[in-house]
Length: 332
Ligand code: ATP
Ligand code: MG
Image 1 (spheres, protein in one colour):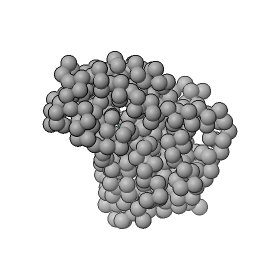
Image 2 (image 1 turned 30 degrees about the vertical axis):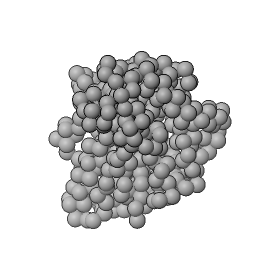
Image 3 (image 1 turned 135 degrees about the horizontal axis):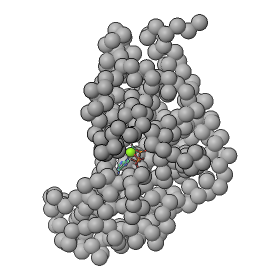
Image 4 (image 1 turned 120 degrees about the horizontal axis):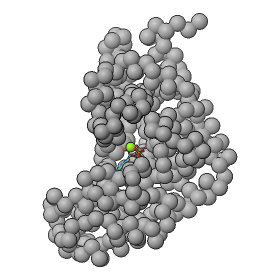
């Protein structure tokens, strides 16, 4: 049976790329397939997280999912560390994955930068824990942004090697689902880098909880070239910042870049940017208001996560037990 799994790290406040590239698409898949969505707190600690902030960021990511329309009766919503099978299967996959495979992960190179000797071992092994997150549910579909596609491909390699080494047809070969105009939202100050929660400057991203004035200011200051919008989408080639703002508009408005260009052909930034800011405020502010309301009652969020964790364990634990049997780990 088809099953969807995906996750978001509580490594800071949610940003527009998380909404358009992940949460909005996750919500759209509800009801079509069985859907399992996670707040991946064990991934967040691959870089230092203040303990009190980690707990509150975990609730904030959960609130973001719920406020954007995730229905905990239709989807399983939980945080990773409450289902210990993730860490357990992650260890087994550390013994399946090859060091050479990890060395090819571009996200590790980006995140470690020139500092590769000083980052945590967890940051390096992260993709094998992510494979465990996915395969513990025998997930067949994983909606992610472009930046995570390589990790889902590695998950396929891990599943195939496990099946081959143990002469089993146990783990499915998962499909990454990356489609639509919003799978790689770029940084507002540098159109060659993706927008991230953990990026240095707050001006480079729109946070899901930003106030209307802040959203307007960030788009106003967003880097662009001096040319007006082109007459056709082909005219966006070689203009990463222009392309990004048009993609954001299209994704927020559930339309295509072609339709946006048809409406704003030849428009200057002085006209387009305020229209984009108004659209973003109209779409994001109801979600931000609902997030604030949910965050006022942390006990209720914790209850949703506890319930989701119990339902996640019902799927994950039998798959972990079967994995132990296949590997020959004695259960007495
Ligand atoms: P961090 O900087 O800590 O890595 P992040 O903003 O990249 O945070 P993640 O928790 O790593 O967020 O990713 C959660 C989901 O959001 C993933 O599916 C990822 O592909 C998606 N995502 C993250 N950034 C973007 C973006 N700029 N555009 C589209 N999707 C994105
Ligand atoms: Mg990321």
